[in-house]
Amino acid sequence: MQEADKLNIEPEENIAKAGDLGREMHAFIGQMYPLCRSITGAGFRETLSLVGRHIPLEIHEVPTGTPVFDWTVPKEWNIRDAYVKNSDGQRVIDFRKSNLHVVGYSIPIRATLSLAELKDHLFTLPEQPEWIPYRTSYYQETWGFCLSHNELLKMKDDRYEVCIDSSLEPGHLTYGEYYLPGEEENEVLISCHACHPSLCNDNLSSVALVTFLAKHLSTGPRRYSYRFLFIPGTIGSITWLCLNESGVHRIRHGLVAACTGDPGKSTYKKSRRGDAEIDKAVAHVLKHSGQDYEIVDFSPYGYDERQYGSPGFDLPVGCLMRTPHGRYPEYHTSADDLAFVRPESLADSFGKYLAVLNILENNRTYLNLNPKCEPQLGKRGLYRLMGGDLETGFDQMSMLWVLNLSDGGHSLLDIAERAGYEFNMIKNAAKALRENGLLMDTEQ
Image (cartoon, rainbow, N blue to C red; front, side, top):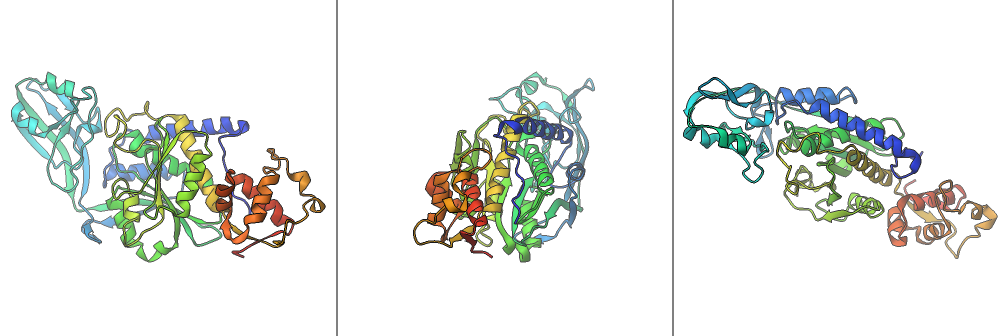
């Protein structure tokens, strides 16, 4: 198998390329940012349409009322306008200025209410008085508005005209899917949620990352097949799993992308299994990144990894993010804007995802064909290759480690971890040994 191409943001010659990529992803987030997304509806479809300009998405429409395990596909929600006007006719809350102003899935309403009556339907963040919170009411038919606490304090005792021009009707749940076939039918699943309105880190950063990752992987050879999902959170993964249950056995590795653009350190949440190859690969990349990072154990709360890791499936799917949900103050507020996500953070996340996939693509188990004592490397011309520089990519010790542990029971990642080497050095040493007839791939 040819080695998969890899964008490495570490070497000096690739720094400019990584910077350009980060700026491209940030610009793409800017295109998606104004759209009012929810778990169903026009905003979600428009977002998938933007993704479809980069990769050929297959769009799936699942009708309202479709049973999906213990859930049911909900009604479709769409919104055209919403406001709260004072008695002077001024919009004191205006959906057109921020789509966060309306509680997601609010039912339509037209009424005139006192401030006291209206306050039961208003949500603010007193601890962050300038920010608008993000709230939803997916499975309870009600309505509400969100606003900054300072704006609430300015509202006088008055009669207010309330309007939410929305619809909640039978329709469809929409999701996008991009399948990239590889040399094997075994799959790597990359999933992100695309259902939040104008929130950049929790939502759009990962939509952009997954889009550009899929675009990049489509340009080179692949060992595995790849499946990229752009879904509404929770109900989307439940729906996909229900409709595709017969094929999930092909998923060998998976990652849920979330919160990948903030300036915080990288964080990895392990799969339910905790010791799957994806868990080891991500841990290896983070350990050798030269940056601070955190690895946390699986828990049945968070993003869609909890659905892929439910006991009936137990798929090896972890979640690679930066700062986890709820652990940065901007989370689910209007402060999660274009200024909060950083092009350099997006590029760094992209590079780490690609480094993980590079390990999965190239992690093989070999058998030493000359296992009784060390083979003579000099007569094979291998000593002259062992410079450990950029040209050869390995040194003498990495070669000796590969020879010693290639007993059919240790993968290249196992050897890298045991030897304390970065994976690519072990991979390069194994390639040289294989080309000189000293290793045999146990999978061939």
